[in-house]
Amino acid sequence: MLWVICGAGRGVGKTHLAQRLCEVLPNSAYAKCGHGQRQANKPANFFNTEEQLAVFVQQSCASYDHIVIESNAWARHGRGDIVIFVDAIHDQTDVRTDVDELRSHAHLWVYAGASVRDWKRVLRRKLADSGLCRAVCEVLAEQKRYLSNSGLAVRSKVWFEAEGMHIFGTGLARLLTGVERCGTLQEATRAAHISYRHAWDMIKTAEKHLGKQLILPHSGGTGGGQSALSAEGRRLLEVFRRINREVAAFADARFVACNHEESPDE
Image 1 (cartoon, helix red, strand yellow):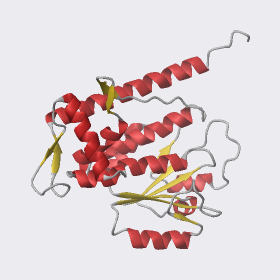
Image 2 (cartoon, rainbow, N blue to C red; image 1 turned 30 degrees about the vertical axis):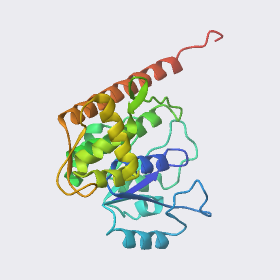
Image 3 (cartoon, one colour; image 1 turned 120 degrees about the vertical axis):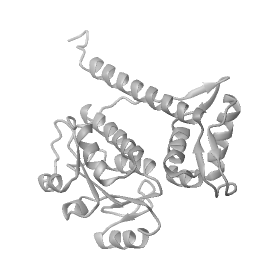
């Protein structure tokens, strides 16, 4: 599936959104079409022309389930299975002249007042996996919060500890989500863009301190067989997701409230 990210201008978070989508989309690749030479802070798949990007997509479509492209040109031409438009930040002045055209080609529109229900309605027609639909909506909601806060945003991080040691955080949650969706640990590591050894170390460390299994391997051998979350793995993942959502919502609400409080000197 081809995802195309476009936006109203600079600084709206297109690159961040594209990279976050790659974190939740299984077996995915990210590419960008832009100007200038590829530098250290540019993605590995960085191209100057639409033709170069098209060659990359053609050569890669058999190797990846999802390709996420950051390109206003491709969106403008209506290329992509799912085109996402990111609106301007409040009071932004350097808005593109073709913003209406980009918006008209988008399947999903991310802006401060966007409805998650509308996103789900579109994604359910495109994605058979309800878990993947939910994960994409969570990424879009993060982008919406960023736009709602006029470019200045508060970020929070949740993790679980046992005996003073970090045992469960975003990385492991992302890995378990991949196992839940893909059915194998090997595919989950690819989706999370981490090595199999690192993934296995995270799982074993957490299981050692919890005294319970998080993943139940099936036949096929190490790395080659099917895997599923245990009951404890599913429960802990859902607890982490819920706390993460609630902490993020609380932080956002407090940020908005504190950011609008008058200074004692005013």
